[in-house]
Image (cartoon, rainbow, N blue to C red; front, side):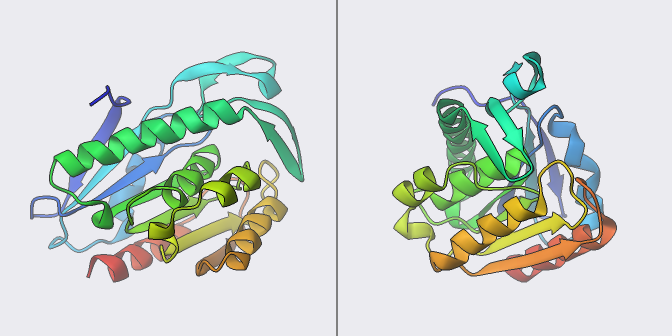
Length: 224
């Protein structure tokens, strides 16, 4: 197996992990960004869950003046209603996500017990990675994000994940990733037959306690 991205790992619960959550951070952040969320999810102690927070590689990001920062792919241009991205970089990050999934398989966690989550740019990779994965996954959590290449997604959707549970959430005051982009992703997926649990919160480009509680409830339902 090829090398996996460096990551922070946290094991929740009193039992050995029976499920995994691979959680991808946003542009310019790192794997530590969502570590504080774990104890706030309210997961039962009886549930053994391994949380994996990988670090994206540092690359120049065109829309930020070429500054080098952690990123899952290059964003060439952006506006409130659209993004132009480096599709090759997006596919490379999907491949990196698949290696993390394969490592969990090797550690005894089948795909059907692996959730993929992501915020903003990480959520875009989560959408593509989960919905095109060849084996059925447990679910995808897409936060304040969008689908960066609808054509790529619809071309490569995996039949195994046609029924994957989708939790998608966005802030109504998001001025970084417009709520319109989140709604476009939701509508595209619903049009393709996916059951999307859509939530909207009165917040900017961030997460809030109500959202974290809802994610926890959504996970608890699927861990039961």
